[in-house]
Image (tube, rainbow, N blue to C red; front, side, top):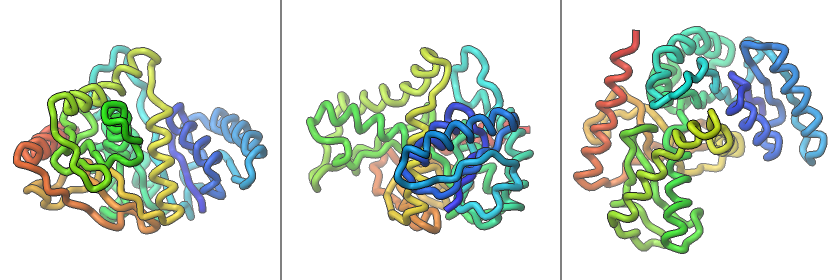
Length: 301
């Protein structure tokens, strides 16, 4: 089981380290613009994996070395500008970068599952579909998975229920136009009541990423772990239900845009697209998110 990580920066290396600790991949290839740094990272990880029970081969390579990968994770990004206020500020630069990378990935690894991590993830997941020609089952973005986990952690404290036992999703855009799907949130078969206090938790969760960025200059641990979670579900065929950025094909009247919806992830990639029965307010929030993401896509050169 081979995984290639394109972009072994802070996020990419948290992902690589997580895969080594989990022992789910047998080979991890690091592809970066700085080959010497990628080789150093691979060597360091090789020494670390010697402490693990399950051996994982870690090496640096070029995009051509992605051949035969079951999963390719794209974490590469243009440099983050100081004072970044929105992920969409990275849209044009990273869209240009993807034009260089994704067609080459598709050529050498035509059967891989593609996990997009780079921001703005909804825009770039849509672009990945256009540039690779892959079916929508094999292209997914990390989307609101990390937002949903943050939301569940906050909700867990309020409800005194373990976050793993909460079925509560943040849907829509991984950004300003995300929203909690409280109309379908539940635990143990009992609905979680929709209250202003609980919706306020979503607002807190929404801004955590930018807060971390302002305080330390990047986010890496949570998003790296979320990518590892997705890849593990693919490699082990776990059939996990997670909110990911995928191509929306008519749900609530939305088409030709990528947003986060609950999907079932397994060996084939996205094995089932779920369509929660949202209330009227949430449905409009989903459509509003679609319009916002589409506007960014249409603004790309």
